[in-house]
Length: 254
Image 1 (tube, rainbow, N blue to C red):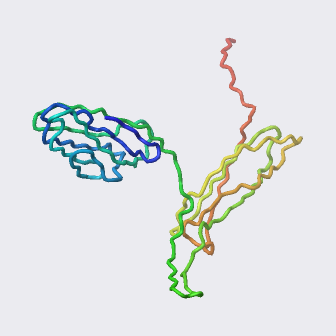
Image 2 (cartoon, rainbow, N blue to C red; image 1 turned 90 degrees about the horizontal axis):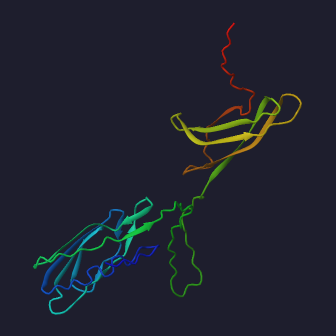
Image 3 (cartoon, one colour; image 1 turned 30 degrees about the vertical axis):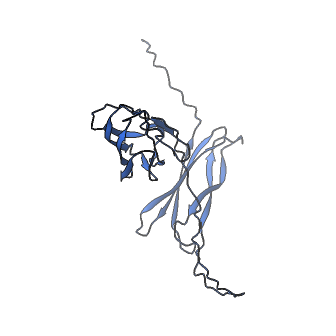
């Protein structure tokens, strides 16, 4: 078996699948092949000899009436497949492959493998749906109502400030902000979390430190900008630096 996978569409898998089946008298050959479920067949297989029928989107049956009866022959099948799983790694193409003929010949096939790299990707903007606008012949002006159009990618940006009170000099502060939103039944839903290290100040005494421009991005997710939203922000802060040191446990006798 030869394999020539393309990294983009994995086409031409299994070229020369049955090459060199050459034992004289091989008749009524049946090859049943099932792919690894991580792949699906995306086009009708093409064979050089015999007939082929798709059983499912991951399996087919290849029937050859005779091969290598009077001379050495080979047979090939080619078809495109597509990786449909979300996992990355080296994967065998076949799950199962069986060969039978009237003469009981034993034929073995290698199980090719490919390395699949599933990079995470998200299509942010989908192509808009086209509106058919008919324009008859010999018309130099057409008036047409294209219907309604909703604004896309609506959302809001929330910017928060918080004032940390009485921060000691020379000590960094860890600050966390948790944002939630009450849904239609009053249940809080997560909307984001941010964690900061606030640098130490060098003023001579404890002083307030203003932390500004803490931004959260709030997509509308199907709602309108005209809708009122009930957001709640929770703040947590504590010192990072401290003077604590664990004392030794020396025992002295009096």
